Image (cartoon, rainbow, N blue to C red):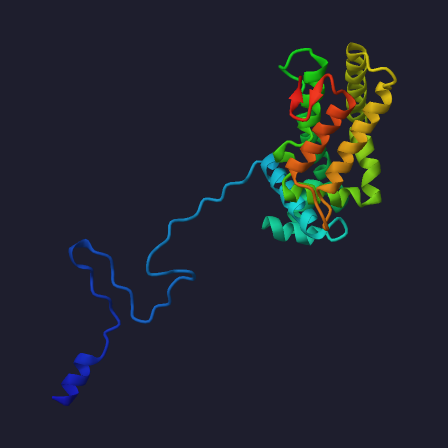
Length: 250
């Protein structure tokens, strides 16, 4: 009986045929395929991003790093970490840190001057309206988020960034200074402001706007957007009291 029992327990080495057409049972102890789990996951489809979308993501990540670490502290490794990509991918799109920062400067400057151009559209031909809108455009909220201001400050404090900015946007800077001068000239003539030099006033307006931007990034006593706008508006009222109050054109 014992010998018979041993013979019945001994594996025959053959697999039982599946019943009712079912799958053959797997031999005990058979290794599972690598990565197999109890619940089979559907394969993930990897979609490749549009190169322009990817570049825009990298530009925005660089703005974040500039705002947090300054110009000198902005490295490809930090940008890659902020964007969640490899440094190799950044190099594919921009070739170097210098080209990446140049692209960021180009994007930020284009955004800024685009707002100034838009301020002159659809408001008529009155010099007071045009000048008021131009000054108010400097304080467009989407241009003055904390991260944008901090990124601009990083560029302003870096000597190497000034020449590229002039090369990229010198023509636009001259255009809006000339526009400000022309509008001031018209207002001086209309209002009979004796002794007012429109070229001097235009320079004062332009310089004070740049100064207000800097004061909004100061760490000790930074201006709010509302305060900076109020100062710029009051300046127009001081220069041309018969044409402006601190609330708008008369």
